Every structure is written in structure tokens, then in C-alpha cells.
Image 1: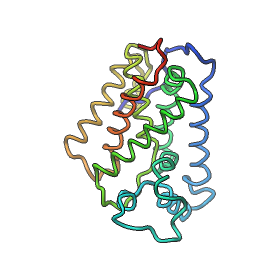
Image 2: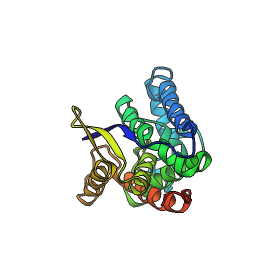
Image 3: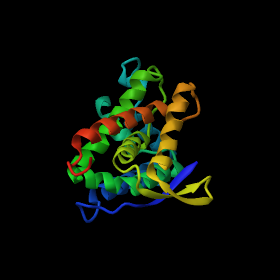
Image 4: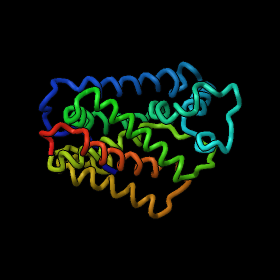
Length: 227
């Protein structure tokens, strides 16, 4: 298990990664108000997961939600699901990756294009899961992991030799090149899919979709200085 802590990769075009900070702040705010259950309660959390999460069976029209659970049109859930998280550990893990690596991707794209990039990766991740995975499943998909996977793929391609401080196995700090830290994470995602990992509560296919989207989009949207 590799936990990113900090990277030695200065920004070139922007002074502050305001778009990345805003995404993180908005995601944390959603969890505080809905996801944690502190404000809306457990019933509110469940309703938000069903109403704002991606339910493959509903999105693919194999099933319908009860009327009182519809919060938005289902076509919008591939955008909203990425701002909900199961618990604090789920949230902190995703936001830590975004905090360490997202600022440099915003720098490479520009703030507005970074927002579009992030949302596009999240949407592709959700659709990959819904269409190639358990497409009749009635369990909601929530979390930013797919969008964050797109950021990881972009960083891996643009800054493979950037130095990154990571925490290995939760206790051993190491300074390694990004290709090693992120490459290991990417390999695990593909291994889990190829080995048929199911039922562990992790949407591995969504991660693969996000990785593929991030790799393709970053190569077409990045500033020309980043080659």
C-alpha cells in the first residue's frame, strides 16, 4: 500500500492550483453535509447514495428507482457520484492523491480545462463500470476514485521522473520517482480486473476507465510545453 505525501514538482504556469483546491473543498463539503451522516443522518446518506450515485441497473434501464429517491435525472449521476464517499477513509485517500498530483495536472492544462478533464475522467470511469461491469447491479457506485485515476494516469505520463515522497505500508517514508510510485498502483488496478476480483466493494473497472480517459485526454489537451 503506497500513500502519497508530497512531490518535488514545482508549478510552471500558475501560482496556485485554485481549481484543484475547489474540487477538493467541494468534495469534502459534500461529505460533511451528506456523506458523513452528521447533518442528514444515515437515512440521508443512503438516499443521497441512491439518488446521486451511479446505479448500473437504473442507468442501463433494467430497473427504476422509487419515485421518492429520484433527486436528479439519472443521466446526471455520472457527474454527481464522484462527490460522494462511503466514509472518511475513502474520502481522505482520494483527496490525498488529488492534493499531491492534481495541482501539476491543472498547471499542465490550465484551470478550466483541468475541471473539464477531471469531470470527463470521472464520467468515463462511471460509464465503464456501468456498461462493462455488473450492468444489472442495483448497488450505487460513489467516490472520486475514477476521476482521481485519470489524474494519476496524466501525472504518470507527463512527470514520470518527478520525485515523490510516499508512505509505504503506512509507516515507511520513501522518496521515489513517480513512475515507480504510480506505476505500481496502476498495475494493481489491471491485475484486480484481470484476476476477476469481485465483491470486495472496490470498482476496479471504474479505475481502469478513469486511467484510460486520463491517458488519452491529457495527450490532446496539455499545454505544448509538456511533451
